[in-house]
Length: 365
Ligand SMILES: Cc1ncc(COP(=O)(O)O)c(C=O)c1O
Image (cartoon, rainbow, N blue to C red; front, side):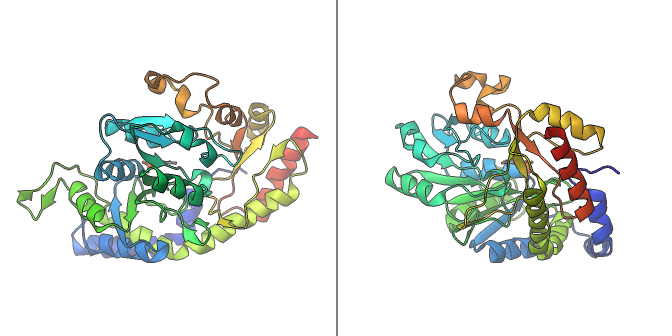
């Protein structure tokens, strides 16, 4: 028995009938780009999240880049973000010509709002909080700082579909937010995909042009854009999967509750959810002592675990030019030596979670 971090084969088995029906429905119509299926998906995301506008694009990375670009972030600007994230949070900032400025994280793995003000300079234009693992950052504090210093807030909500903070959906706090529908996410397409949400018509209009080469109609290029459209097939599958998302989140939560109950060692800490938040747990990341040895041990029993990530963003070869060095963000650096993600997906049986917990306990005890 192999216990994988995510099981897309089982997902297909569970959804086979509906998925194949959706594919047939789209293919029969003979149109695959920017069709009503995409608009229907965008409308259903608006309804789900409470955002006025949504635009489907072809990845979370593009969603971030277009959010920055449409917000006017450009050469010489600084954007404050977290050193714990996927490289796309930072590369998107660099691609629009701006400079990422890191602020250390708290023990919940998210940016520490109490350290943000000290990082603001006269070049700071925006804050990009990353809702890591699905836990929404402390958005009331971040929005207060942004308002005080007249900064734009662009949420990296790639991992937070279905997450809430004080009853507001992730991505609805700042001016604009980027989501990913990569296969590893809880709302996932059949390949790469993503979407942007915003309440601002101005940003919506700009991105609508930008994602499709700046074209208005077939012949008028209003701005120089890119090709970043969400394919109709993905949109149709995502609309179907969105209807099942709440149930999937509950099934994942149930597994995490079981982990909390059965892990009987103090060598692993599982971050508590606060009452004011609802974490969709797109990833289940724990902090483990002797992390690398534990990972090797679990592998012997065919249990997959993943490290997200070993290297904080300021210590990569590619980000060296930003001028940071080891010791600059002690909390992030310490956390990255401990993070380990266990399988918690919706297709796991109780027996499988029990088996993983048994092996974790036997490693430490
Ligand atoms: C926090 C974060 N930001 C951005 C991205 C980029 O999304 P995509 O892979 O869809 O381009 C990811 C993807 O994993 C992510 O986790």
